Image (cartoon, rainbow, N blue to C red; front, side, top):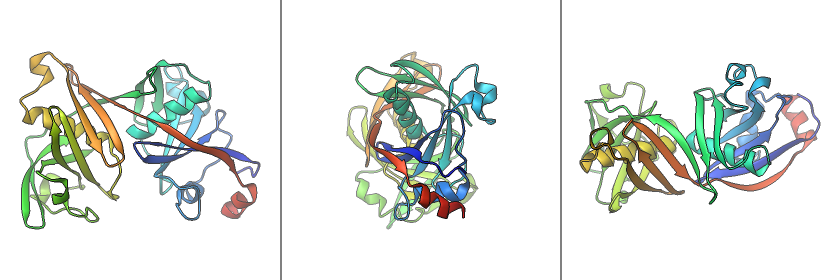
Length: 290
């Protein structure tokens, strides 16, 4: 890694926060150890993950998508590992591109390891991401916390979710550990568990235990799963009615608006914020690679 100065920004989408490293030509080497330290909240800048901003044509993982999407979101988890996609992250990624004058408002294609993602940058600053389709397996589970139990709807957004409707979000407990569920065989690789309370017509609030992370401030795929589960509970299926179903979903970190269309596609709309920018200290980087 070159130890010349490297620019960074810090941003978040409904308090899912990221270190952003602009690097159009893919000139900055970001080994796992460096990414993990940059995301460290005490020893680094701090973030749930890192957004490495690279032109698709310059990155071997994205060159095959360069004809469709100029920019590649080389997303890394907080532990430094590469990941396919992050719904909140792609909003922040698109917001950075617009802020830097690299794209204009309107429609944008972003290359990710999970394929091309379609993004819309609205005039009011909201950013919409096409999140794909939900799969609704027949088998569900029962989730239990502190003596209470609820039937949970099985929703798959490319990752597994169990959605339980509760009277009060406090009933979810502390969510530090995985809420017990049965039968365990329904989710052999673990599951994201959402607890959902009604706030009004087509308006819900949620808390989530994310698989491997505990309770988080925001989960984009979780909000999509919750909206779909709420629609089915309310007797709404856009594939049958021919009309979109839109739900407002309040998370601890902010609010997302989820729309499911008759063709099954799901859009997630929400904010993205850049809070700071600066330069990574070269001498600190030397200690990371030394």
